[in-house]
Structures are given as C-alpha cells and as structure tokens.
Length: 245
Image 1: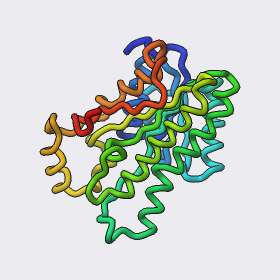
Image 2 (image 1 turned 60 degrees about the horizontal axis):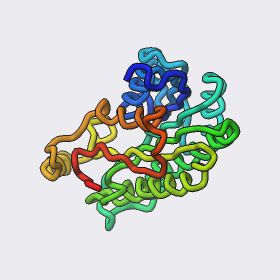
Image 3 (image 1 turned 90 degrees about the vertical axis):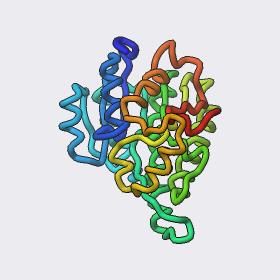
C-alpha cells in the first residue's frame, strides 16, 4: 500500500485501538498524514508509536467537543481530505430486557456521534470541492443480531445516513461510503459472551473472526485515488462471508 495515499490528510476516530488504530497505521504506511482521535487519553502514545501527525482526546457525543476535534485536526493537517469514523461501543441485551438507558447510550455513541463528525467536516470538504468520508458500520446493521438490536439499529442508521449524505454531496466531489466489518477480534467485542462468539464463528463461511489489519485495507481503498474514485453510497463488507451481496 506504499504511496497509495501520498499527500492525503486524514482524521481517524477510535484510533487508540482496534480497527481505528489499524486503519491509522495503514493510512500512514500508504503515505497519508494522519491525526487520530479517541476518548482514551492513551491516544497520544498511540499516535507517537504510529508516527501520526497528532492526536486529539475528545468526547464524540459532545457537539462542541466534536467541532473542536475536527478544528484541531484540520489545523494540524493544514486541511482535511479523509474522515474515518471508527469509534463505538458494543453491549449485549435481549430486547425484552433492554433498558431505555442502554438503548439511548448505544444510539448516541454509535449513530449520533457519526452524524456530528460527518457534519463537522463538511464545511472544509465542500469549500475545497473534494473529500472522502468513510463510516465504519457493521454487518449487523445489514442482517441484525441476537441480543444486539440496539447496536444493529445504530449501525443500520449509519449505513442509511451515509447513503443519504452521498446523494447530497457526491456532486460536490465528496464521496461517502461505509465499511461494514463482520466480527473482528478487538477490545470492542470483549464484552460479548463466549457462547455468542462460539455460535457466531460456526455461522461464518470462513469459520473465524477477522483481525483489524484485515479491515483497514478496505478503508485505504476507499480513501485512495484512483482506487476509490467510483465508490459512493456503498457498503463494503470484510465480514468473513456473514453477509453476501
């Protein structure tokens, strides 16, 4: 992937771990200049270890914090060509037992925050007449998941929002897409029961979960020129065969 993103300036959220960290690393290896953002204060150490241009600690569900994070990243980078939203939470509960608080928290973190970030980068991208927005969703947003209705609903919302935004801004040179991974071995899935994981692996044609480094190249493709030039409103699925479209 060396040189594939030469000259591209990117903000990657959720960059302290998991898919976000792997994506930031892949972007940097491909020649991009990257700022990583996370609520985890260790994001600065991660940025230094990866050779990122900078790091921002922020709360993705706070509108003012989002605006600040985008502003700081844009200042450090001298502009912004690519946004990758890779943060999120994952909890488990049957819908009949799910509290309203748990539902609301998941929608806020996994959907509303993505809206806030997408909106925050648009003025810069519209002014320059180009940009790439890559929202990390999930295959569960396409097919649902047992005891994961709140998470699936949020990720389905990310997919639908991304398609809608693509219709609005693609004529202005801003391409908006989703990456919808299947189960990936990351800290995000640590809270899911072992039984769910066993049953899920048995369902997958590949019979295994992925690792973050197997997802990141899809984001690199979508961010690249000319590789990503014809993708907009799309949902690409590195998902071990869990969803076949």
